[in-house]
Length: 54
Image (cartoon, rainbow, N blue to C red; front, side, top):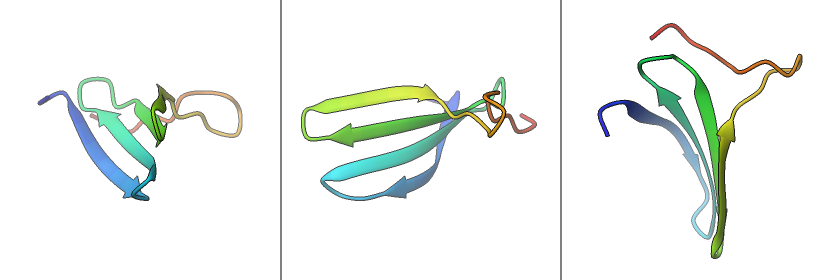
């Protein structure tokens, strides 16, 4: 778990988090609602992945 860092969390039952891959700098969105969840790259307004410098 040293590669990913959680930088944002919102909610308790319906959770939304933003994780950053420390090697690539790509941001990911995690969403959980009950038993369903998803993890996907966070995209900017042009449809490109949000990237910060690692």
